Image (cartoon, rainbow, N blue to C red; front, side, top):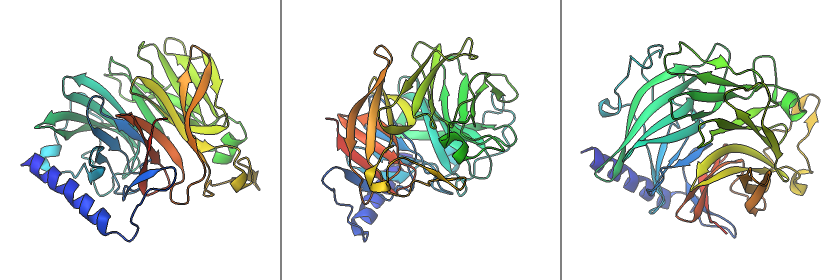
Length: 353
């Protein structure tokens, strides 16, 4: 019954997309899957055709994307079969997640066994929290179960989330209270990385991780290091979890502003908008204390972090697109890059060069 309902939802999305005023036709650089409201982050379920996209807007929640048919469905609906709270592991959660308020931002997915995953989601809807889900394949379709949440400390707004294999969860805060976007654009420290370990009552700040605009976040397969995007520096900062007081390395991006960072297809990919964009008057600027809101359409760039060579290699890029702006994430599925955006109501797709 559940599988039939999801299949019907996917078919319905395809039908509504075909009937929309915007035909969502490809342009000379990108193809599109339209109607996905502000898919700020995207993660692939490795070894499957499925992609998960967030929705950075009230009620936009999570989307389950079929990359073969290029259709999607609103995934978390708060139905009885999707709710099974774990009060033992998450005793401080304030109650069930309301799908009408669910405002999903950063995502993180970790395989927990054959056909099973743990999905973490930054939520701004109704509460500032990290929402915890389990995903399991049932009759060829991923089934989502909400398990609980981790409230953010008072006044702290999460941006991205990641985990280690021991269950430790990390999250970034872009701007702490009293700081602004203009501060990190000008290179001042505004955020940090916060940590929760199983059994902890709350998140705690990791000393030394205060950066100009702590944004994208990913852990390393060595289960020792983690990588943080310092948005104001346009750089990736790597830390050793055993001692975060001093970073291990700082690697700057070539002329783009990395946002999210994820392992996907065995590669550590970053995505973001071009920094020095002639169509927008060049560099992002701060005028009268206010940072450029980035609504001018900038070129898009996807890079790969290469720690061995201490560089970020550009693997795909393009010019400003009239129907797609605010590139913020990339995932690799079957030789194609799926691109998320914190501004647009669509996903973009491009073959990996």
